[in-house]
Amino acid sequence: MARRVLVVDDEKLIVKGIRFSLEQEGMQVDAAYDGEEALAMAKENKYDIILLDIMLPKMNGLDVCQQIREFSTVPIIMLTAKGEDMDKIMGLEYGADDYITKPFNILEVKARIKAIIRRLGKNEEEVGQAKVIEVADLKLDVDSRRVFIGSREVNLTAKEFDLLSLLVFNPNKVYSRENLLNIIWGYEYPGDVRTVDVHIRRLREKIEENPSDPKFVHTKWGVGYYFQV
Picture (spheres, rainbow, N blue to C red):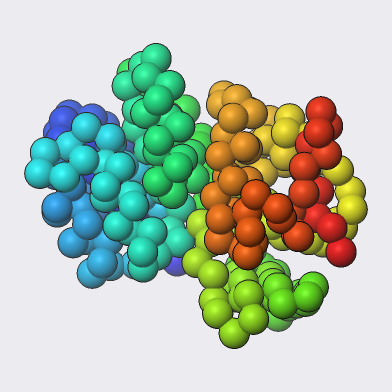
């Protein structure tokens, strides 16, 4: 079944180039040219991935990303201006899974999207081999990719879920930020370890009763992060 991608950018030539490249890979590509249109399409359709520019008419990409996160965990890659580190960090804070810096090589975009698609495929292959783990009031179901704190479901992004799963299924093992970046984002990922810190902080805000004094995801100062049973 063809993967469905939403490309959001007000520069029509960029959209045209990305659409052509992805369609050559057998993907179905929809396009939106402003923030409001992108949000409406994300609500009306089911996408496997969204490529989202930050600078958009009517509603900027950060606000679009934040509102999509209220109803969907679809992987989102933000397009940020070259050298705008704050845009990258803000994108991650607002719920993005990844970012690509403009101007970009279309081959890089395609490679990043295909990497996420591969991970989606791998997750789907695990259906029927469900793994469920419960620690205190936290319940994690790998099959459905759902997380609960007590009876309340916690809405995690794809990367947040992948991070939590890795830590949960390897309790008390300390992972350096570099290790987590390589395992979750891949060795070819051009970002830095701040990406991991942002995701860990967001994860704690969602699953910890007191994020500043966590009972699940702990910091080993000077080393990295681990899940405590």
